[in-house]
Amino acid sequence: MKKILIPIDFSENAINAINYALALFKDEFCKFYILHAYQEDIYLSNVPITREIIKEVIRTVGKDSQLQLKNTLKQIKKLSQNSKHIFKIISANNILVDEADRVVEEKNIDLIVMGTRGKTNNKKLTFGSHTLQVLKYVKCPVLVIPESFTYKEPDHILFATDYSIPYQQRELELLGEIASDNNSIVDLLYISEGNHLSLRQESNQSFIKENLRNTKVHFKITKDKNISNEIYKYIKDYETDLLVMINRRHSFLENILFQDNVDKIGLSVNIPFLALQNMRRN
Image (cartoon, rainbow, N blue to C red; front, side):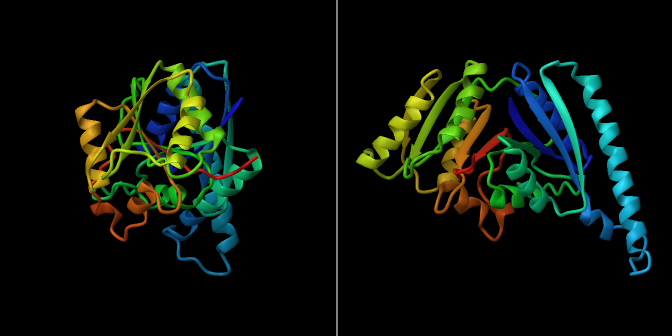
């Protein structure tokens, strides 16, 4: 059974991410963990926080978190009567990135699904602060759903990679399952100034091919010094439904995510985006 963590702040973007996950995995047995980490909400309260009332504020905010989670669960079950799906709610007095990391390890989560932005919904940013922190620091694949994106089967998947490291089988299997379940075409795009792969890159490419053997895979090479612009152009030219990248040290994705002004990057994510973290877990 696939285990999926969905952090929410009860915004429309978060609910939209849940709906996308339910549709994407409609044919799979899944356990969904719906998480609300409310520690920040305590200090955003309109009530001035003092030592005398802190316990009462924590209790009140925690109680409200539980209530909203239960109401969200009722809403989900009205929308989805899928007998293959099981739901668990988690309310935690913690910051999101730490609680998500804890749940990933404790529950052996396969995938995190979340919206690009939350309640603040700053449209100048590609990713909201919570999404960015999860992408950077939580050791689990993350599927990010853009604001108001209407579910569409991922017929065409773009996997942008440089083949520079051995990939994790568990994460490639996740991609393979998504692709095979939707009869998707996967384009593996290598952006390079040269036309040839090294022996190590060829070996890593072969490993991907083997793990995606039940999938239609096309291997492509393109030349461009501006990686984010080339990815964005490819998405537009080939009507891509899902972008996949590896997040690791010195990767394409890390170079984008760790810029000081991430909101100014050339890559504007307007389709679902799967970040494979390439981290070893059980």
